[in-house]
Image (cartoon, rainbow, N blue to C red; front, side):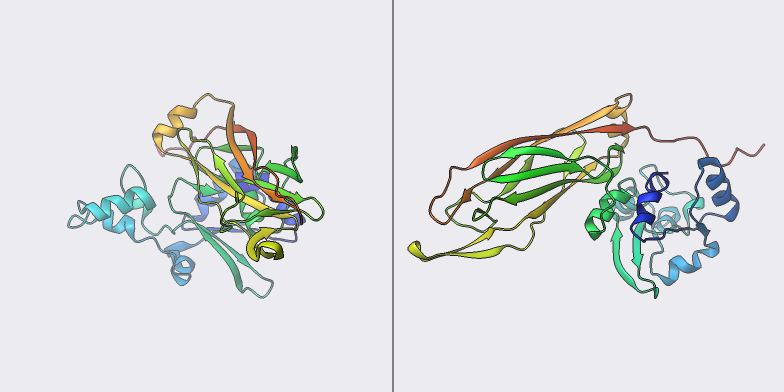
Length: 295
């Protein structure tokens, strides 16, 4: 459903889209018709393609094995990769969830996998990681001393279990630099997300910095002098407790603080703390079955 909502922007970037599942053709066709899916849903009987890609999830079989199902490690992996409520026979043959990007020759150029079966990357967040754009959320300009800041979330609305991104585009003023992580004696740029229940901020990666040589002090320190981007990934947890906490809510607000210190060729300015806020709509989970129950 989330992929369908982003289909136009995905195709606008010159990308195609298809989903492969171990579900039957009947189930896939019924789901496609019920939810208005217009991209290919490909059934993989016997998990033939799933096995060829090395993606077969063997945990359901272990969870059903009388000799292994009570093993603490099997229980842990079942909760992580299959279901919090245990394995079922209908789950045998499923794949580890993930996304592949292929070029026109069929060569895999990127791949992304999920760490928890109920936490999935949004399409927009993946496109940001790939650097192919396609984001449809308006940005907010924030006034910062000695730099320009534009920030936006990857998605206007999310659901529990979504893994999405908060993007910060920073542009230092002419002849100004801000300190990068690893700069000793200065306030390096950092982003701190305020904690709140069931919202998890992942480790923030930083882009490659430049080395600035300050001759008067014979210093060489890592800095950002050109426009750069920070992408903070956020997980809206999908556990039953998280679902209960967010039920009935229309929005989720994430707050945080950007800290940095800017200098030019002569002066180092005082460190800056910028309060930031992102408000995203909350979508409800769809729980109706794809196929009607058999009499």
